[in-house]
Every structure is written in structure tokens, then in C-alpha cells.
Length: 120
Image (cartoon, helix red, strand yellow):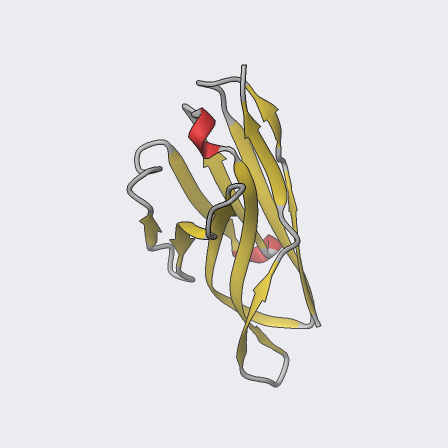
């Protein structure tokens, strides 16, 4: 089984920064596309950013030039550096990953989420 555990959320003032981490554990053979999604109250979950195993990235227009996704394959960890945060960035942030276990196929996994609140 795979676990994705997010950390780094919290309360920050507008214009501030946070760094989210997502640590994967389990009988992992390889991590493929990894991503961050978010869900604000009353809204659907939306894509924030993704990163391939080769390091290619993709961002939602709303976070381009403010957020940076990265990964450390040796540590089985994905990061989301968030700068110039705005109140509209307030949401629960979820880690998502396409992961291959030891001898199996590639499956999709979600973390439990971490709350990010941007408020003065």
C-alpha cells in the first residue's frame, strides 16, 4: 500500500510564502506524474500543478509565476513552493500521484490534505 502525507500548511498573511511537502511511503517501485490539487469551500477540487518523472511541469494559470512544484525522487517527496499568496489561494491542498508498486501496475493515490489559509 502507498501513503502520501502532506505537511507544511498553515495560516499566512497575504503576500507571504509557504512550502508544502508530500512524502510517499510504501513498497514503491517508481513515482510517475505527481501533482498538487486544491479544494476551497463550496468549490470543486482543481489542479494546481503537476510534475513528470523527468521534471516537466504544468501549472494552473492562477498560480503561474507564483508557485513552483519540484520533486526529490531519492526522497520520494514532492514539494510546492507558494509565494505571493492571495486570499483566494485558501484551500485544502492535496497531493496526488501515479505510482508503481513493486510488481504491480501504476495506480493513482491521494494524500489526506493540508489546510492553507491566507488571511490578514
